[in-house]
Amino acid sequence: MPERTPYIAGNWKMFKTIAEARAFAKDFRPRAEGVEGVDVGLCVPFTALAATVEECDGSGIKVCAQNMHYEPEGAYTGEVSPPMLTELGVNGVVLGHSERRQYFGETDRALQDKVPAALAAGLEPILCVGESEEEREEGETERRLRHQVQEALEKVDAADLGKVVIAYEPIWAIGTGKVATSEQAQDAIAFIRALVGDRSKEAAEVVRVLYGGSMKPDNAAEILAQPDVDGGLVGGASLDPESFAAIVRAAVNAK
Ligand code: 13P
Image (cartoon, rainbow, N blue to C red):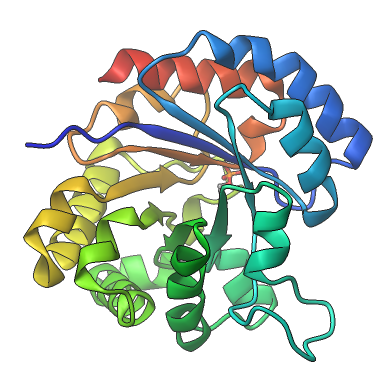
């Protein structure tokens, strides 16, 4: 079995100015630098990318954007393209976050182009999927996940599937303080891994699938200890350097 390096990524959403991002990075960097065996990333607003890349230079901390257009350039007012991100030294990009799907019309169809475009540009995509509360209650979780994963990965070559990071983020757990049980997280993530396995057995063994949704220092260890959970995509608790570092430490201890 190939080892999968756990990955803890903080999604700042629409928080932190450039000055606040710099202050975070200065405080967080020494806390993360001694960490081995866990990948650490910060997914920051476009405006703070350059400053965060500069502050994290040489630390091993990955810096990611939170969205991206799939074309390299064009008449798409307000959008940002893959080469615009790579020029800044950005390492990856969150794609299909439920807040983008809910408020900004992000579609599975667009993700079909965004995921391969990110890979082609050398950006590590963090593809977000997850069911709503209503879907879970109606027993529709697996159907929703199957649809989202299959659609978004349709144009990714089987040989490249293992390079995609997938984040399972049940919508009902995001920003609600209502965390999935470790069993719910394990079951959904094992299911997502099996969906990747339908395309490529090799990719299913290496693809990293993270959990996201109210992950905090006090609940991270139990979720991260699950065999298929390869890390976390952390919202609120990633805004404070010490609480984010505590989750990174939990990942070190969990494996
Ligand atoms: P919270 O950790 O604030 O629930 O957010 C999770 C999330 O949406 C990460 O992308």
